[in-house]
Image (cartoon, rainbow, N blue to C red; front, side, top):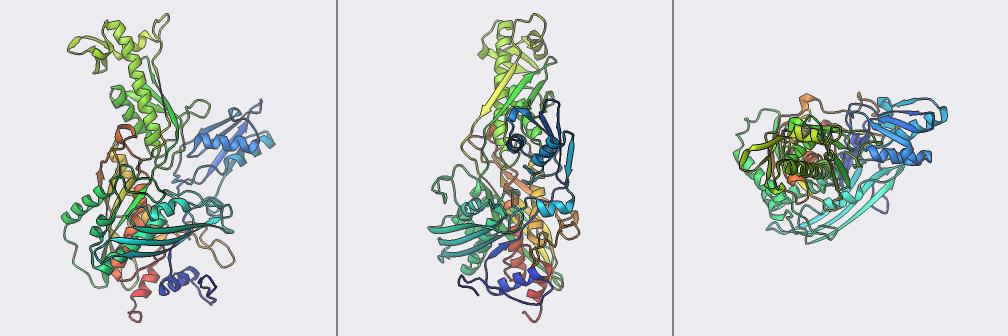
Length: 590
């Protein structure tokens, strides 16, 4: 043991990381999470070419169109207008596909004066990309017998790899942010190591923080004999409560989600009778995400056939184009089938931020709404002159603008569009513009309830049921939101039970292929029950909030709490491997 209390063990052992976890558990050491890869289906790839004038075009699978252009231009020492980035369909990103190969491909193309393709193998993906960082979190908490939280003392350490930049600040903020601690001190450290530089992975820093604080919340509830859900409800923050950074929580739905989960838990059917060699456990956990903010713009163009084209600069990574079509249709007043959404390259698209951080619908969607409303105003101005009526007396019904109360005085949208797009037309074409620079976040929370079956002989864990209650602000596309939640639970199972980028004592990665790095298969993911709670945002389009990150944050913590409930043992390191559970439940340990 060194002067700081850290322990080093020299031993002849076959399972290096398992040994570390066992020693940590025996000594009551801090919560730990492993380095985890985003696990996207499509490896990174970028193609670059140079035209005869020296301008560069890059085709790439990327989440951040304009950021990629800026990075390529900076690397080449060129002005941004001479770099064009074309975003290709993204085969999975989860925060991992911002910029990596694009400057390299562009530099090679400039040097060779010919097109260049750079494509990573799966092993190169593990060795040289930007995974989620390993973390160590030490917590001490105080609680009264009535369930009132009195104190939190925490130290948060992230492995920042060779370049640093781990999400320490986010982790520290959320660690002390979910609940009302009367006193707290949280210290964060970003440590440089020989490993690859880390990056974002769906709610960076939040999964690690939630695993630590939610494990601790369960332990405190058990110590004072209080129901874990009621304990959280007693202490959960609400609108107006102070955040750890001194600001106030805006409108949030954490307490509403906990209350709805209490209702869901009360309605659940009786569990199956216990089987020999199998233990059942149930765990709950909270997960939250502050939500991203970034200026955005969009345009909305009326076409000659009466349809509407929406043009945005975001990458359609998770079906956000469908939400944009719905937003534009509602704001303009036409069926959603009459709206098409386009995502052109950096030479043609209006500015938008990266597709990540749960902010695209929140920011770009707001710009789309303004653009559609602007286009509608322009259309009504044309109709008012043609119908000889005041704008405020018009309405749009069944693809026609008409005078209220006088259905016979109407002009189809198609005809109005033609009046602004034909030779000698006296009206300007309808071309709506929308821009936003929202600076207020709209945090969102999700609460999980997980059921697990644990085989006592093998330590194998099966997640048999999973319930998620999430505040979505306003569910613009409920089907897509449910898909986001189900995918997040699958990733949470990976965090909790399977995924770990392991290095040996010489610093070599020993899980550099998909044969060595375990991802959850379809058989490992149960049917997910989702309940959507709507606490509308004051800033998002029609009250919408970002929905991508919140559902992954508490998933691993809920599964870990369920395992603790089933086994009576608290496992403090993710993933929770079967051999560790089996050893904890072995007769000699009992």
